Each structure stands twice: as structure tokens, then as C-alpha cells.
Amino acid sequence: MKKNHMGDNGKTSLVGSRVSKDNLYIEVCGSIDELNSSIGLMKSFSKFNEINSFIKKVQEDLFIMGAELSNVTNEGSSYKITNENVKFIEKFSDELEKYIKPLNKFVLPGGSNIASLSHLSRSICRRVERKIIKLSKEKKINPIIICYINRLSDVLFIISRYTNQKLNIKETVWGPDNLLGI
Image (cartoon, rainbow, N blue to C red; front, side, top):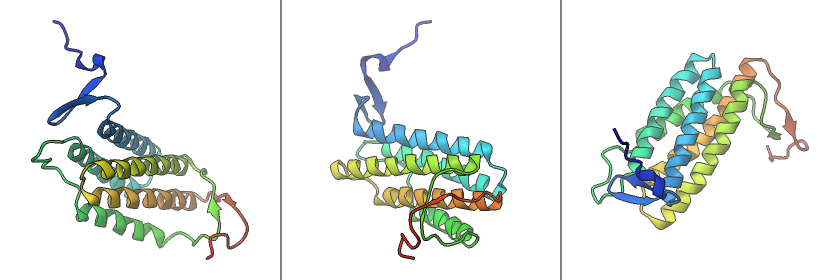
């Protein structure tokens, strides 16, 4: 049986269109997939049930986001990131933040495996955010997606700090005292 290798000509499918693989929608969806994979790797190192439950939900949300952004039909996707998804992240972030000390310097990425992977996921998330903002200047997208991705990068930073603290791993900070004005 012969397979149909439709992507060999440098094109791929969005819902409602065939586009070049360097299309900005494809860049965004591929970056979301990379973020989801990075977060999955992070979960594989985590021994924290609260983190693992959170990550599972975020991975599902990232699939929803990818489905929403890959549908370029006039009807749009039936899958949507909503304010409820954002509130979920904010609530989890607020819960973890209760346990970590305020910062007055920058934190160098590192520490435990889970914290280091959380920092890596955070930096990938920031790249996803930049690509989504670029896309939003060209095409109308759900503005809640930008809010969600921004909050996700914030909570990934908090997770790195929280897990290092729970594992009694001292953070490495950089800069003079009160560098952050706190």
C-alpha cells in the first residue's frame, strides 16, 4: 500500500487550508507543540502530585489552543481557550506563591531537574508568546490566548522556585541587592 506523503512538497494542512510549512500559523502551532513536549518532560521528573495535576491540565489546554489556532475557517474552532482556563492558572500560581520567598534579585535558571526543566519550559513559553503576538498583528485571534500564555510563563517560573525550595535546593541569584526594586 502506497502512503500519501503530502508534506514532502513543503506544505501542510490547517483546518480549512493548505499552507507552507513556514507559515506563521504553523510556526505558532509547532512552538505550542514544543512547549507541550517540554512540559511533558518536566512532568516526567516531577514527584509533586500538585504539579503533575496542573501540568496534565495545561497540556490539555495547549492542545485546545493548538486546535483553535490551526482552524482558519470562517466558522473557527469549537475548541477555545477561555477566561476559565486563565483563572485555573492564576489560582494555581497564587497557591504556590504562598510558599516561596519574595525576590530582590534575578534567579539564574537551574537547581533540581524539575526546576531546570521548568525554566526551560518558561523560556519556550515566552517564545510562543512572542510568536502569538506576531500572529495577532496579522490575523484576528482569541485575545485570551495571549493572556493564557503570559500567565503560563509566570507560573512556570514560580514552579521552578517552588520545587527547588521543596527539595531544599538553594537558588542561585544574580545582581546587587534590591536590583528588582523590592
